[in-house]
Image (tube, rainbow over all chains, first blue to last red):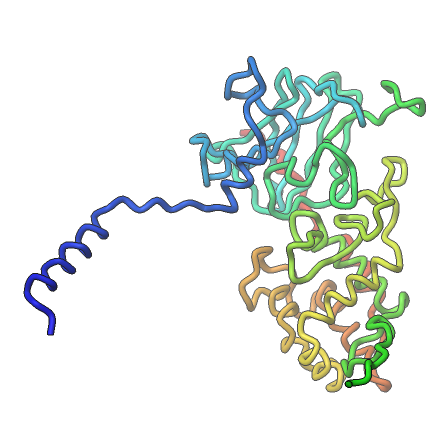
Length: 176
Length: 176
């Protein structure tokens, strides 16, 4: 038979546990964020940071970024090269026929906030160079992922078509 | 001492599952439709999924291929080996239920979870993909009739039509 002191102690312990702040960590999400590595030296967090990385890893609503995107990515000027496509037009058309066009910045990054446009998936996506001379339509549907670099990783392979680009490289691998 | 039994290759042994026809004639068009609609890297073109779809629209089987169907971009079309890998993944989801559906001439495809998910009658992250009786549905359900000796053939026309879906409406060009 428990003593009154024992019961009181248990009650106090329970109350203390309930009052203590409980940290809930999504380990998988945190691993995804950690895998992106640190910021590039000299480039503060902002529109020109982390080109080529999956934007919605941090801006997708699970943190750590406060500003949430529906779509975000990086566009490169030429297939296989690292020069960004500056001021390229990225058009997203969703299955209801709604479109949103956004332009890339000086490092090729673009993003669409939740307030701007939330596409009804699937979408078809097109990128057009600033001079209008080159256009590439995405070869597949985008079925549910607004973070381009989740699929468009740095290297083409069995699970990636490689980075998003506008102009196909010349036969000798140079600029078109 | 127990005798060590020689095991034949799992790939070539019969394990008692009734399946629809896996030939390129009957299964190939279905596999290509599934690759187009469901097999992108953000969906079932991903090894993390129970249903893995292999093909040029998403996940490749061979290290020699990249995730692109477009030859001039370095891609290549879906291979028969990828068709077979998708077949095995699909049949392997619910082999017992698949056997029942095939034994019953494919009359009750809704017994299969993947059919219910496509039709939107079971929760599916990709949402409702088709409606019972449309080309997408007929493409897959006609294939389910092919396993029985007295069964049917895959509706090639439905599968061809299904590969053009969804049809994106013309963007709304009305002035604001």
